[in-house]
Amino acid sequence: MRITGFRTFTTSQDWGRPVGDANGVFADGITTLPLIMVETDEGITGIGPGSHVEADTIFAAIEGEDPRSTTALYDRMLRQTFKAGHAGALFGTIGAFDTALWDIKAKAAGEPLWRLLGGRDRTIPAYASGLDIGLTDDELVSVYRDYAARGLRAAKLKGGLDIERDRHRLGLVHDVLAESARGVRPGLMIDANESWTRKQAVRHIGELEQAFDLTWVEEPVRRWDAEGLAVVGRGIRASVAAGENLTGLEQFRPLLSKGAIDIVQTSAVWGISHFLRVAVLAHAHDLPVSPIGNLPIGLLHAATCVPNHIVSELQDLEPPRGVSLDMRIEDGSFVLGDSPGLGIQVDEDAIASNVDGRRMSTPNGPHVRPEAAGRRLFAATPRNGAVQPTTPLTPG
Image (cartoon, rainbow, N blue to C red; front, top):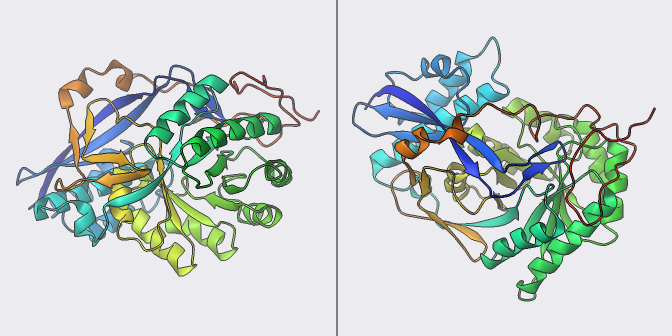
């Protein structure tokens, strides 16, 4: 079997509500998802979510190769970008090709990837993550009731702009989950998306911990600040989670060597091989791993064979437009199916007619770091309405 070509698509996710974090909000609730499809001379096509940046350059490393050589081809793609480096969106392109290759390998074997990788249990524990900082109180309650109806008993809220507002919103979600938790204490996490300084993080989380037993705080300071993450970890009771934006083992090494994080995360768009390697590195430090992303299907399959997987993020309850998954949400967990490969099906006609999927990225939103991030003196936000991140007051 040989790799003969690839195609790229971009589809969209219509959340039906605003989505975002401390860095910004997509008010229309539309986000985009790029996909890469890798073709072979035996008619098997692999699908991987991720960036298209320099896709032709990356494809040159795998063209004509046997797609089942997943580990070797992953390293070939990394070497293809040796001089410029593989950080950022380029790493996402490598991850998309990598995921597609694993999909082909499992399809060729006639097995779901979770079984090919050596997984025993197709059930992966999940937590709810609504990208919810732009929601009003009523919207927040409604969204997490939908998660609770699927059996979710843990939730991660977006926060970091206002302590009082974060405390209020955590209380609302706690009560929603507790209603159906059957005596189990709801798990609560908060994600600041790198919006604090070290001292702000300790002070903010310290106040929240007077009211809640937080499971973890995610990205309280900059992703690469090993010393700062360690300082925060020593100053709070909750675990510190980070890693979704790190691209390559070399970026994890200083964080793990300094004991800076307690929950090791990786993003679905960085690929399966990356996740497997990070999981081994974390396991060597006796740390759990947790996949992140709105279409984490590849990492869910991989998580079944990882001894230190703890829980995976569940964002939207519906797949992106033109995408169907052999997977269901049941009793608070992802349950993978028996379809060969990843169990992803793509309706190319639906994607091709998708205007939202072709739109340009907006100049604001969660993907753009605010100028004042990490330099806020305080932020005033409405008590009963949605947080609308804008330029806050700063020390002058």
